[in-house]
Amino acid sequence: MEILDKEIKTFFLKENSELPLVIESIDPQQNLIEYGLENKSFIEETIHKYGGILFRNFKVNSAENFNDFLTAMFPELIEYKERSSPRQQVNNSKVYTSTEYPADQYIYLHNENSYANVWPLKICFFCDVEPKVGGETPIANTRNVYNRISRTTREKFEEKGVMYVRNLTERLGLSWKSVFQTDNKEIVEEYCKNAGYEYEWKENKLQTKRVGPAVVFHPYTKEPIWFNHAVFFHYTTLPKLVQDTLLMQMKEEDFPNNTYYGTGEKIENEVLEEIRNAYAAETVTFKWKKGDVLLLDNMLTAHARSPFKGERRILVSMAEPYSIKNINEVK
Image (cartoon, rainbow, N blue to C red; front, top):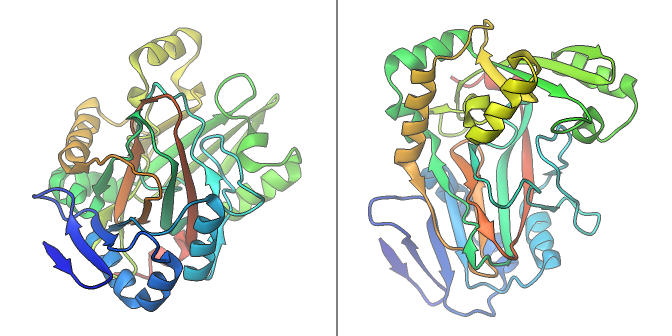
C-alpha cells in the first residue's frame, strides 16, 4: 500500500506485513508536532488497526524535539517506576535512554511492563544516533502471536495465568533499590501491598511474586492478545552460558527473574518453544534512520532489541497508563 499527498506518503516496510505503517514526510523540514496534532484521530485509528507507526523524514533532531512531540500528543507520560532494566532519564523529562543491557546480547520480544499491574498503552522510540551494525528494534503483532499459539496452550494460560518471581539483590541482576528507585523498605512494601504482590525479605534480598493474566482483551479493539512476560522472564531465554552459570551457583527459585504458571507449576519446555516460534513467525525488523520516531500500541505490539556494535542511542518514553484493575472490564 502507498498513499501520496502533498505532505506525506504512507507504505508498509514488508510486502506481507502491515506492521509498522510508515508515514514519511515529503518535506524533511515538516514539523512532527504540527502533523501529529492535525492528524491525531487518524494516528489513533491507525495505531489500533496496525499496532505501530514509523514516522520518518520529519524534523525531529534532538531529545528535546522528541519530548515536545510526546507532551503535545499525550496527556500523561509515565515514569519507569518498577524497572526490569537499568536506564537513565534524559534532561529530567519522562524520556529515557534505552536499556543498558549488554550490547552483544539480544533482548527478547516483550510488551513493556506487562509483568506489572500498571503498564503504558503507548510506547514511543526516537533514533538520536542510528546504529551502524545491528541494533534494530524487532516488533511483533501480539494479536497474530495469540492466533499462532495452539488453543490448548492458550486455554492453559488463560486458566492459570503467569507467575512472575523476581529476586532483587545487589549481587546479581537489579537490586530492589534500583527497581523501585528508593532505599526505603517501607515504601517498597507499601508498593507491593497496593500492587497485590507477595513479598519476602531474605537478608538484603527482596523476593516478589505476582500472578497476572497471559491473555487479555485490548480496551479499544476488544481483541484477545498475548500479553505477558512468560517467555521473556523465563530463565531459558537467557544465553546458554548465563543459564549454566546460574544453575551452578543457585537454585532455580533464586534466579533474578523467572516465570511459572500462575499455580506455581513449571512451564513445559515444549510450550515455551511453541510460544517462541509464534513470536518468530511474526517478527518484523527494520534499520533505524536518525530522526525516526516509532510509536507503538504497547498491548498490540511487542518489541525487542538486536545486538549491536558501536554507538547507538535510541530514546524511549511511555504514555497513557492502564491498570490491571481495568482489564477485567474489557470483554
